Amino acid sequence: MEAHNFRNLKVWQLPVDFVEVVYRLSPQFPDDEKYGLLSQLKRCAVSIPSNIAEGSGRTSDKGFHRFLSTSLSSCFELETQLILSNRSGFLSGNVLNELIVKLTEIQKMLYALQRKLNRNDQPPHTRLFQFLFSFF
Image (cartoon, rainbow, N blue to C red):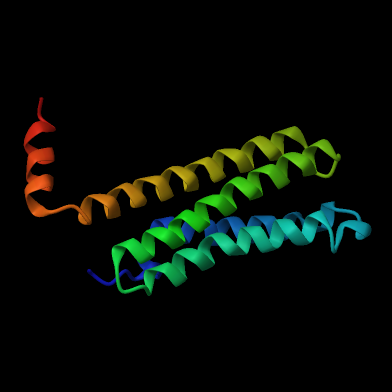
């Protein structure tokens, strides 16, 4: 396995930027949500790039893939929490839509990296077969 330097991965950089956005939204939430939904939002957002970074240190692509799956799960959890925040009146519909567009981009990138890692786990003759037939 080739070492994965997480700091060079756009799929890590975008979630780090997203964490900053979530933290900037904090003042929009009431004080009584400080340890409720807001806390969950922050922890979930931080979990996405953290798992990518941790997985990049694994000694196999399969190990890295497992942590990417956890990051992807956190994306879906975060999306749910953002929807709940909107429905509770803490986020406007426009802000929610902007955040979901960014989050969807992260989800797509995680899926793409997982597919790439899956292809790397296949025997060389299988990769050659797929390459040759990708032209048809």
